Amino acid sequence: MTTHEVFNQVPPLAGYDAADDPALLDGLEREGAGWAAAELHELGRLGGAEQAFEYGRLANEHPPVLRTHDRYGHRIDEVEFHPAWHELMRTAVTHGLHAAPWADARPGAHVARAAKFYTWRPDAGHGCPISMTYAAVPALRHNPELAARYEPLLTATTYDFGLRPPLAKQGLLAGMSMTEKQGGSDVRANTTTARPEPDGTYRLVGHKWFTSAPMCDIFLTVAQAPGGITCFLVPRVLPDGTRNPMRLMRLKDKLGNRSNASAEVEYEQAVAWRVGDEGRGVRTIIDMVNLTRLDCVIGAAAGMRQGVITAVHHATHRQTFGRYLIDQPLMRNVLADLTVESEAATILMMRLAGATDRSARGDASETAFKRLALAVGKYWVCKRWPAHAAEALECLGGNGYVEESGMPRLFRESPLNSIWEGSGNVAALDVLRVLVKEPQVMEAFQAEVAASAGADARLDAAVRQVRSDLSDLDDLELRARRVVERLALVLQGSLLVRHGHPAVADAFCASRLAGDHGQAYGTLPTGVDFAAIISRATAKVS
View 1 (cartoon, rainbow, N blue to C red):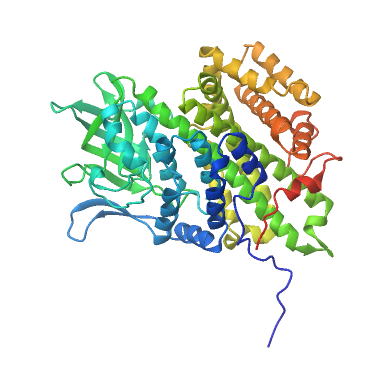
View 2: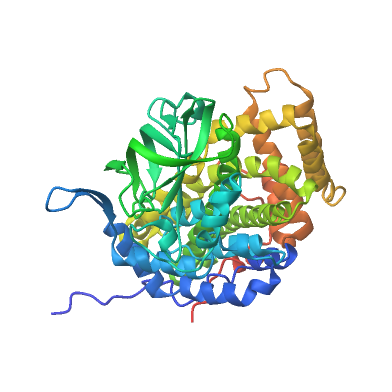
């Protein structure tokens, strides 16, 4: 007996090009990487395929498992991953989402890589080792000898999983290990010690509270050497094939990012090579931290894009009260508001990628701009993602609360990027330190924002407010979050007014700068071109 007919259900969001994103593609051209469009679309079609979503589901439903010993009782410290994880990693490495730009002389190589990292997001967890491998190269260059040996393998587009001597492999992945139980973000409070040996190596003794992706081949870590906090390279396997005594104590049971292993580690006389001068460890590894901060912005922007296209797709196909959701005014307000937030994040992400590319090629003004704008963007875009993910999930109603929709996984992932590489307060205070110690970075930031002067009165007024905020030094630390928020909003507004879609720019300035907006998404003012905005978040499913 048939109890009911299944109808009014939304078809799968699959079979589309994840790179078919106007804000992304415009930014690709504008920031000098238009030459990468063909490969980006190739990756986008992979990312929008049903198989990619299935890999992401399997990698998260079958999280990594720690095997500390083999069946004979020998210590092995290995992490076992589901085959879907390896497929995700293989695609990412093959397409150069890791350190490949450092071996690419073409202008825009880092922009192309950022766009690809944004596009290939069926699972966020595997992006962690990909991101750290990308970020390790500039830090490693503080030791030219080590860089000469390892960099060609870090930039190679071959995924070569398994614990073997690094220099015997076809491709390497790099991790980062800094935080300890007692210190967290206060790296200078670390207690791990590094004893120099006659052969030029060091022996590390101590612990690390968070070591993400512990099956990477090499790690950059910091420890207390005789000269102070110092950066070191620690391989998982030594040149003679023996395991370096870097003991994996347990894996973290995390809110999200479950496909990726994060371990507590103890060094028991682990062999390490110094990277940079003794006592300069924080300064050395900050080069790595800044690039992983860029990837935090990219990941949050990508998460917003995934959330809003899923919400628009659902609203396009779901009927209620005799009309499609997409045709109902209040839902249109919500979807347009989510789209505005998403595009503001994407346009900022692409500008930061362009600054990273030009900075890597020696452009001092772009280096100064990036120094401030990256910290500002990391704070704000990552802060905006959790509320965005929650609202996008709600657009699907009860269906969005069910794991099969993929939205709960997106929501659980959303707080991570704000925590990783310095939580909100750390990022905000970093902005203040930069403003006090490096006045040239504010000059570069102001020059960027000034390029839109006179284009929108609401933006001009917001810029004047920022200047007023910064002229008053009383209680500046107490007001740090508000100051950084306003810096982010005027930067996003300036970019949208100059380069964004006019309807998106107008809605952003009206709501985010002029204050014609409520405390929740879906409170854009009347007069907004909802149709033009929503059309930019509509996936073209084949």
